[in-house]
Picture 1: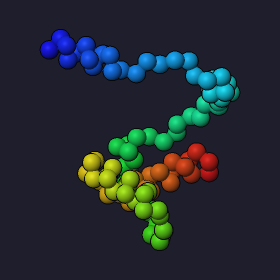
Picture 2: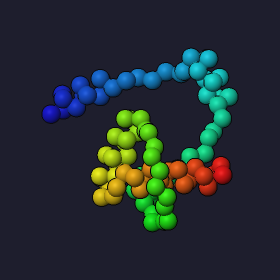
Picture 3: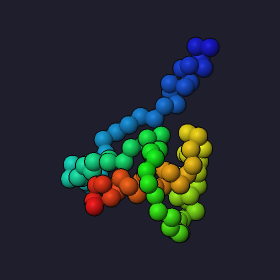
Length: 90
């Protein structure tokens, strides 16, 4: 067992300083506040209006898979994301 553990330790990546241009980019980067909650907090009841909306396949798959994990409908998650966007920028 000890030999296996040593091999795992030896295989780990060894990190070095970032290249200068990357270090400068990190220093100059602007922090953007994450204003959206995690998927499990996107479920609230509210009065709605029915609309037709075309979304990307990737977006629909994201909302469907996350809503399934939390036992909710994906439309509720989409609606909540849009509501949060309106609260922030409306």
